[in-house]
Length: 98
Image 1: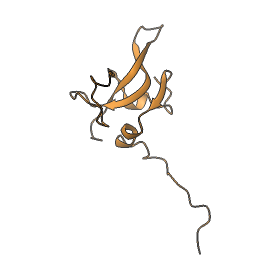
Image 2: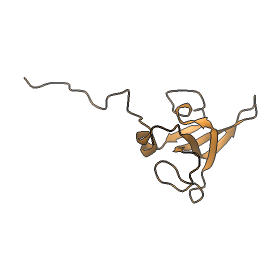
Image 3: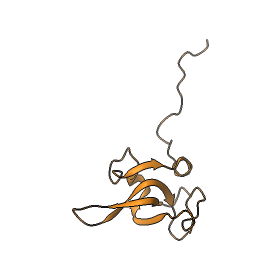
Image 4: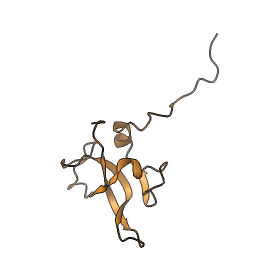
């Protein structure tokens, strides 16, 4: 799954007033084009998620700042499946034993 680039499925959308392109908002999920479910297993139609094939997964992450203006929450399972913690370490050793 990590080899393919994921697009975005979201619970809501907003339209950029400058160029008129719609972007994801609300809760966002990773979605592989050609499938009817998100990476975490939610059905697109039953969950009423809108597809955004023109927006890449990396662009909606709050760290990127590209199309993340309307994003309120990022799915934890989708983020983990797409390698969300690849660059950062989840814990630090504060007082190592001798």
